[in-house]
Image (cartoon, rainbow, N blue to C red; front, side, top):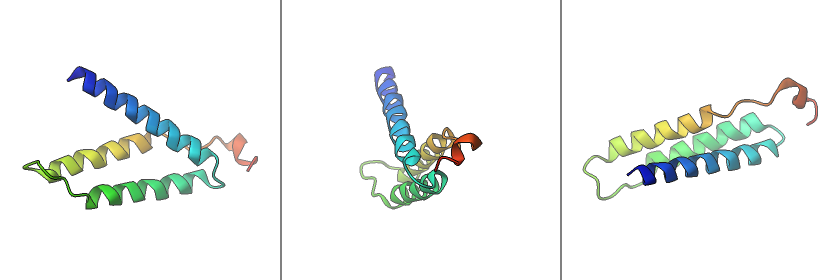
Length: 84
């Protein structure tokens, strides 16, 4: 179980870095991150989770994980705002 948790944390870090990289290349990174987060949350709300007796709790944990990942990203510093 610890190996699985370690792999999941590694995936979260990789995905968070990837999202941050793409956001930094956008003209308005904060808007991109907000729109992307909303799209991901919509996908999680609509996904069919088969094989579990309580799909709502799995969906809730997934949405909390999404919020946690996006809360780790902070807006660009003011000195970099003029570069765009």
